[in-house]
Length: 233
Image 1 (spheres, rainbow, N blue to C red):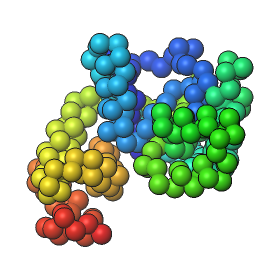
Image 2: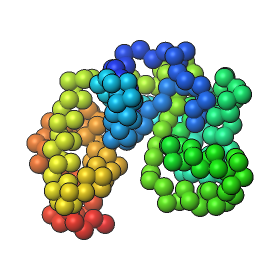
Image 3: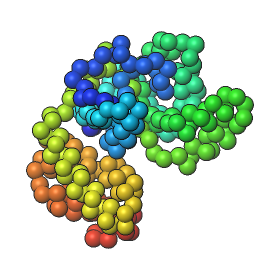
């Protein structure tokens, strides 16, 4: 799986000691499988610090979630267990992790969700109502690498190959934006969530060596659009 970290500089070496405490899944190194989310995060940070954003791409050995030597936790979506875990980790009374997981995967408590968590903790909204609200929330994703052991599962992507992927992706997204009559968010989300992008992101498939127009056709076939992107299935 290709995953991305948005920040102010390219990441060459991960230092967990520099990671912030009291994040959603505790102190650790965070990545997402949605490149556009990492780009948006980097852009927001860059604006606050008046610097340039940067997204570092990694390859993640996803089968680690199935191996006994790693203690892992996965939340498929927003739910009560996810909420309890986030509240536990975001408690400012503690500066060390409240759990001993190597890896934790699940949705993100973005600014809007964090505000509602505050309302929930203040008793202004019930847990059930809060979770019902989240059923309408945009799909998000993050993985927290909490231990030195877990960092062995991340490998920085070859930058030359990554540049091919970025250029191809930009061409395809531009085409999709036109097809969706200027709806950039729809085009970006559809592309980065596709199996075609997953194949493009896997250097071993060799898909990145094909013209972007051919890859765009593969994407259309995957989505059963077949030349009519305004009608995705």
